[in-house]
Image (tube, rainbow, N blue to C red):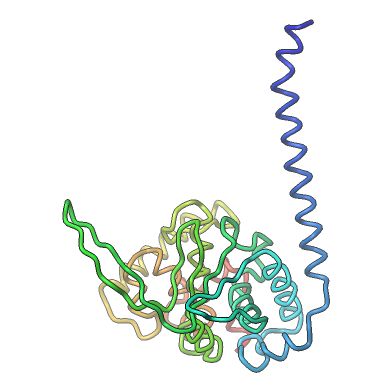
Amino acid sequence: MMIYLVLLTPIAVYLLYWCLVRLLKHRKQQRRLALRAEPFPQRWQQWLQSDFPLYQKLPVDLQRKLEGHINVFLNEKVFVGCADFEITDEVRVLIAAQACILILNTGDGYFPGFETILVYPETYVANVTHQEGVLHTNATSARAGESWHRGPVIVAWDQVVRGAKDDRDGHNVVMHEFAHKLDEENNRMDGLPVLSDRSQYKEWARVLSKEYERLCQHHDDVIDAYGATSAAEFFAVVTETFFEKPTQLKREHPKLYQQFRLYYQLDPVEWQ
């Protein structure tokens, strides 16, 4: 009898753990459903209408969907002001809207693995260390934003506002940094996010590798040259382009546009 008890104990522990995980996941899903169904404050909607033109272009059903995602995002993420910057509801809503437009139709993960967003009042200076062999050099770099692997997202408020108000220049710091968060969901920041269908990986790799090499070798009028920095930056830069310059991207890079359309499950050309 004692032998059976010993053998059953690990199984019982595993089953208990499995049930607990399922229960917590179910509660999280129910909480998120309730948050998405909550009324969206009229004041928040006015901020989006005045400061985020891309929101105005969305079909009504996607506007409502975005508002629900914003409710969940604001419930789960923590905003911290840096350099005496004050975090207000307007700050939180405008950042959340630009981040959540990336996940409008791709599930309800809400950028897992981190929760803190640091906001500076304006472009800030970061210390950068370069290492080459045993040689270390320290430098400073002006930043509009950055995303730390499994760490916080950092953005400059003046750039957040600029990116939100100009939805045609292909530059949006919030979309860029949160694209990095999507990229790292497979535990690597390498320009290959988690795709919804395993059959997509081959074509994704083929198209993006070709387009990345092309950008590295030639100037492009649609995709910013910063995308040639690395595969991860290419994914983030093309994400900005996909949402802000969709017509140009589809015309000049139709296969690339198609891959991003499949990934985000959105077709921004239809919103123009």
